[in-house]
Amino acid sequence: MTGMFIAIDGPGGVGKSTVTKAVVAQARAAGIPVHQTREPSDTTLGQLARHGTDEYRDMALACLIAADRYQHQEREIRPALARGDLVVSDRHVASSLVLQVLDGVGRDIVWELNRHADMPDISVVLNARADVIAQRLSTAAHTAATSGRQAGPNGNARCSARRLGS
Image (tube, rainbow, N blue to C red; front, top):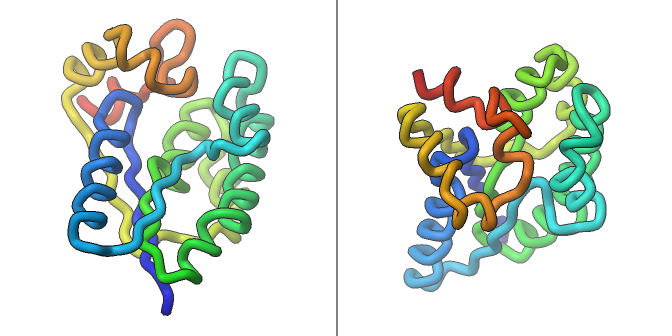
């Protein structure tokens, strides 16, 4: 039996984690075996990507995120799919296409870095008004619960709210 892969993408503060948890809860309530995950992953490489956004930028960060994605699919996503699980990921390639391009990496380069990544069966891209995202990002609870990747040190395009929510 082969599972199904769903990716939930969108700017920081839009509600990806909330939607991911809701989808997982609904699947479990329906008796569907489900594996919840996120990108960057919880591996050592993923933690480096998640917490290294002040040190790594542009191409270095894009390569780090892509490397984590490949390790993540080999060690976590593919085995869960092979078991027949529904895999629900908070972020995947669509997030790279926004965040790394906003960091100045060419779209074609981001595609090339991720061309061997497994694509989800369903990709959901969430969005919200820029003021809603900004308010969510400014709350202490949200900041503590999410990674530094969600918003840049000056709250600029890292969250991409202005560009995607306008």
